[in-house]
Every structure is written in C-alpha cells, then in structure tokens.
Length: 221
Ligand SMILES: C[S@@+](CC[C@H](N)C(=O)[O-])C[C@H]1O[C@@H](n2cnc3c(N)ncnc32)[C@H](O)[C@@H]1O
Image 1 (cartoon, rainbow, N blue to C red):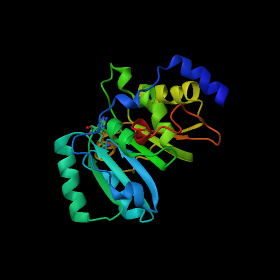
Image 2 (tube, protein in one colour):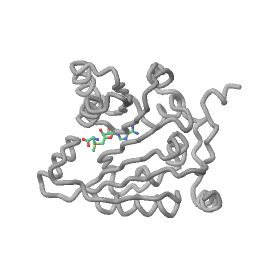
Image 3 (cartoon, helix red, strand yellow):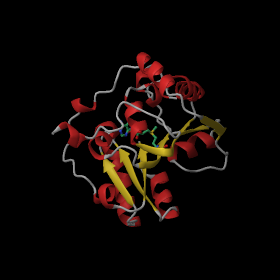
Image 4 (cartoon, rainbow, N blue to C red):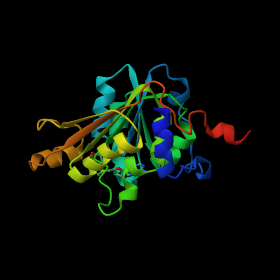
C-alpha cells in the first residue's frame, strides 16, 4: 500500500496547506474539538437538504456541513435554525481552507461530496484530481469513507479511476435509486430520468499520506 501510494505521489504535486489562510471570521466550532459523537463532513451542502435530514436521522453523529455560496448558505442556515439540531454545524466557507484550519488528522468518519458538478472542462476542479484530496484522506479515520454522488458519467469514471490508480483505494460504485431524494440536485436529476451514480471509497488500515501528522498548530511551533 505505502509503496503504491509513494509511486502515485510522484505523479501528483503535493498540496501545500501552510499556504492557506484561515477563512474570514474563522471560529473553531466546539463540536469539532469537544464532541464525543462521530464526526461527519459534507462538502458543498447547497441549501442543506441532505444535511438537515442526516442530522435528524443520525442523532449519534455530528455533521459539519460546509457551503461556499452565500445565498445557498443563507437558505441552509435559516432552515438549520428552524430545525435546531444540536448535532448539525452549518459552515459558510471554502471547504478546502476550512478543513485545513479546523480538522485534525484521522478524525472524520464519513465525508459526503454530493453532486459537486464543476466546470466540465476544468478537470483540476474535480475533487479526486486535486492535490487537496490527499490532505482530505489524511483527515479520514481508518475504515472511514468518502461518498461521492454525481449525474455526470465522465466525472464518475474519472473519480473511480483516480481512486484506484492514483490514491490506491478500494471503491464501490453503484447507481442511485430512482426514489432517492437526498439533495435538491439529486431530486432534479432523477425527476429528469437521468442516471445518478454513487462512489464509496474506504480508507484501509495502514494507509499513509504526507499529512498524517500535519496540523495547523504544528505550523506555529
Ligand atoms: C451543484 S451544487 C450541489 C449542492 C448540493 N450538494 C445538492 O446536491 O443539492 C455544488 C455546491 O458545492 C458548493 N461548493 C463547490 N466548491 C466548494 C468548496 N470548495 N467549498 C464549499 N462549497 C463548495 C457550491 O457552492 C455549490 O453550492
């Protein structure tokens, strides 16, 4: 595993977390440092449909759901305020900078990336292509999962290939049930009879990244 990963690293330039400033008005949520529940992340939560129902259905887990676009976040924040789930923390930030500044290595049980839909012509914006993906893997617990969903077949094909060949990770790919309604985008695509796919990627025992001991605090020592 380590040998494979080292080989793949030669193809991938290293992510440079030390270059990222904290998001504006960054405050570390108590849930991240003090919660005794399993921590779950959602990247690109939109208006929070998945986050709100996940929090209701999983009272034993704490979900931190991050959304960068202001108007979507404001809609999400309003609904989260009405639902008032103690186990949900909505965050308005760029997920990359926020995760670098807030999340400890080996601490996250599951990471959801649901319908990221980047610029189709810019492969650098696809999460599994980014040097940041190695950092994200370092934040995942052993046995933890990244769950990706998309309606773009080429995005799914690429993510699956990257997971196996670059990141040396086991993957499970499946089709999303036509009755599923996890997110606004999922509802929209399935209503149009489009196929949606899901990829589950698990971090195996003994998996190593170059960020396994990296924390923002280690930069100020
Ligand atoms: C196509 S929308 C999908 C929203 C929701 N997951 C859904 O399925 O309805 C993708 C979302 O990801 C958000 N996003 C993209 N990159 C992000 C980043 N680096 N940090 C936080 N949010 C991001 C966008 O603002 C957008 O709201």
